[in-house]
Amino acid sequence: MSTFSLFSQSIFNKYVLINYSYTSLTTFASNIFQLLNQPTVLYKNIKLKIALVLSILSSNVMLAEGGPKKDTTRLKEDLSKIYPITQNISKQHLIHLIDSILELNTIEEKEIELINCYHSLLSAKESNFSIEKYGNFPASNFYDHFDESTVFKVAPDDEFPELQIINIESDSLGDYHHPKVGAVNSKYGWRDGKMHKGIDINLNKGDEVVAAFDGMIRIADVKGGYGNVVIIRHYNGLETVYAHLSKIKVKPGQFVFSGQLIGLGGSTGRSSGPHLHFEIRFKGHPINPSSIISFNEHKIYNDSIIIKKARYGICAYPSDTKSHTIEQGDTWFEIAKRYGLSVKKLCVLNNTGRCYYLKVGQKLKVN
Image (cartoon, rainbow, N blue to C red; front, side, top):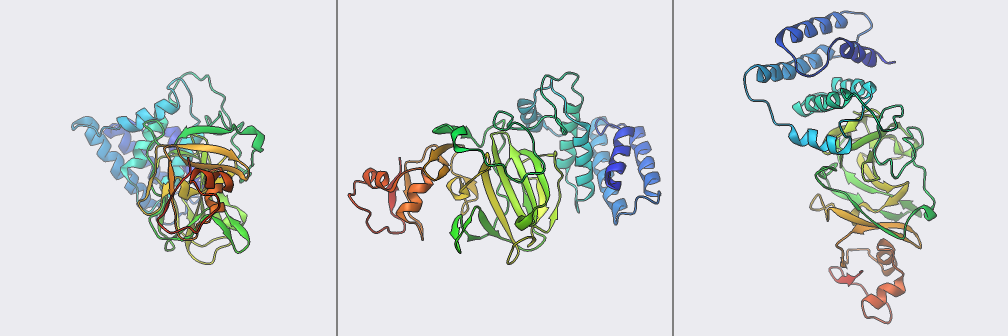
């Protein structure tokens, strides 16, 4: 176990990070700085980070003793809908979260609220849910287990229904948050004779990259051409991929909310320069992120999507889609593939006996 994990374990074993009194906070601080004086704890700037944690926690103590507490109903409600209070959460989750907070340059109150949410789940007395290494895992109705070593296991096509609708934004799933605002410098599709299975977003080394949706970290490690990569499994069965990071700020098994910091932009792995390679997958199959997300307006098109089995694999698009607006580089074949149609069917929908020249801005019926 790393020194950070040992340090976090020591903190956890001595104190529950919720409902502090002034006396327990003072004792907590004293024990922390005793640990810091041990020769095994040699991390740079750790005293500053602990001071930041204590400053936030001390403000929570003052609120508990006198002023009104911040309303965290939304956070607690979201987690309770996903994990009923009768289910347990692993202690290892809390240790990972403390580790990740200690590695941050700045610590926000949101991280402390997340610890409180973890603890409320950890305090549950009963469990009627299968628990693996890290406790409950999301999307158990889509995946048999929570694999932390295999980047992707692609499910066979016969496991998919012809068409299914899944929600991607709701009160229980949380809201979408754009992982990094920036220009798209490479789209999804064929590129230099190879399939580019994601979207490349321009950034500078060290820029913050955040989670797109609520979920659990499945992979946070160096993985081949991805370099430093974070893969998050979400509660609706989707997974999002954040590659080429210069630094990873989360750990496997950790819960994250949309908009929460997960890493810093970089150019690790097979990369020609700093950018974020962002993918969306469902049961291992890549989905065009541009079919679900507007990268100009930095929001999702609709709160639910259709996942459809087609001749060339699976595709996904907003459930309210009726037409497609032609963009630069679009072809009849690519549009048909995007919506799980044949070129012939696409032509019939648009009352043309043969495929005519496509103009940017023109609308084609796809449903």
